[in-house]
Image (cartoon, rainbow over all chains, first blue to last red; front, side):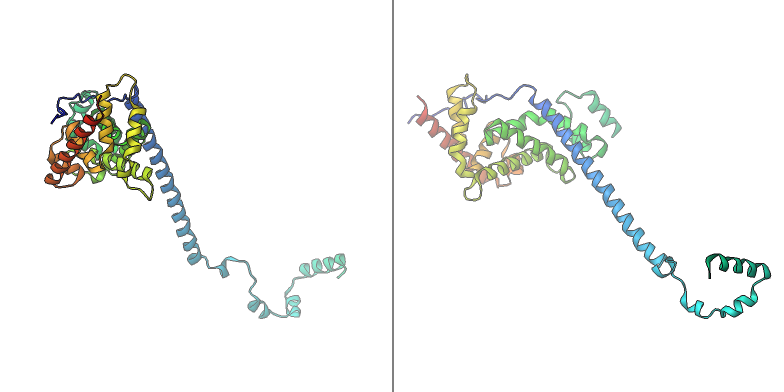
Length: 108
Length: 196
């Protein structure tokens, strides 16, 4: 039976590789990796800022509870103030003069 | 490390850079780019043709080679010098080729069902002045099941030993020998049948 001599055949390929293909490919791969690295680094920076912001927010909650941060009058202590008469009694003559002027001006 | 680096820089462009030196550069974040350039210089052509023999079309080979190199970069920390660098590179290239063929075959077909379509691509991709027997040889290879194709190509074109093919493909040496034997027989039969 006829036998084909495979070993004696040329190892050449019937296709061609485009000129400069490998050099172009090298540059493309390096560029692609650079792009991926940049994205990865940006992602890491954003993640770092996000975690720093979360930590800061939690810390603020502990260090400055809302009650003490807002300027809400302390109604309990106002109610414990001296009466209006007592306040007038403690006013100096000048203060009383100014009060009287203001009252006349605003029609009070 | 410094001595190795200067050796490589001096010999850049030649193929005399040892795989050990390239592997060391690959694992060093400051010299990865240099390592990838050296890999392309030393193995780029071999890897391209290994992939092209599997996928046939140049455009597909281009995609596969690019993915291969990106995976070399991505998984560089997994490389163990227990195996030759070339085997590791061929393994990644082989996996990328199989992945591309799998994507082409879709969910319903297997990679081995692509034989006829790959065979048709051989003639489309062949140079106008290509030798007819070489075209027939590639058609015969295209029709082989993926495993036989891999083993045949690595042995016949890349001159790999069965031990090296085992490192790339993973099967036992005896299985690889059987695959090669069947591949050779099918190729011879195809060429005899189609030769004028």
